[in-house]
Image (cartoon, rainbow, N blue to C red):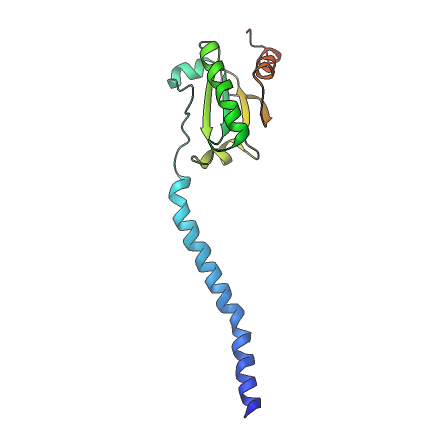
Length: 148
């Protein structure tokens, strides 16, 4: 009788991985379904928000980061200064990639903060990952041909 009991236990454990697999697949499917609506939100510039016509006419410095990221917080006052001091020369925008998850894929973000320099026609000129000092940003704009 013990042999028969061991035989039944062996069959049950052989089926266990199938049940585990079904449970994991179901959990992943539910997780994807629940996260999906958040991924559809459109990234919205939070700093330096301008009309599309005005933004298209000027080069753009786009900073992609997050409100709770330490280097991103260090970038915030720099972006605010650049926005006011160079208004009409280039546009400054910030997208929080933790709130706007589409932005990571759209802009190919691997590290935050990431600064992307765009020409007035919308083409990408340069990209930098990590903290970027104000003087370095201005030097890069000069190098890219912007008269500032």
